[in-house]
Length: 167
Image (cartoon, rainbow, N blue to C red; front, side, top):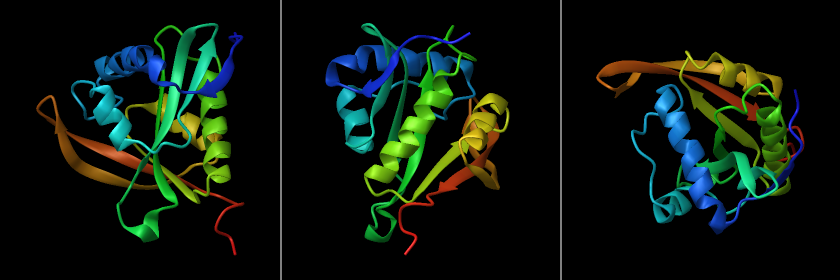
């Protein structure tokens, strides 16, 4: 079942819906090490200004994707970490694939050559989504952090552009 909507640029006024979707992800305990959502100001500061996308159906945001820096060092300016979240009740409808593909396209237009994601191994759907969009598994970080008192691993996936930085 597909949803009729469109990919759009995230606007400041989308924040409350973006935050709601982020909270739903946090509640699964398989989306992030974070325990609570940041303020808009903190989120805005942590993410690149480019490639902030939402999947919009009318005025309703059904999912979002954004990029954050992996390092402040200039050599890594073209490397970004992917965040993608889909509203509960909208999973397995193709929104994630549409959003992630649009994020990849936007990232290449903006000069990013590598995208990476750190995903809990239990989040099989997210791993599969990334692999379907050209990401490959590059490693596993064992017991990298505690989450609700339990040491958790993350798997690292990356996508190297075939368009940017190939000279």
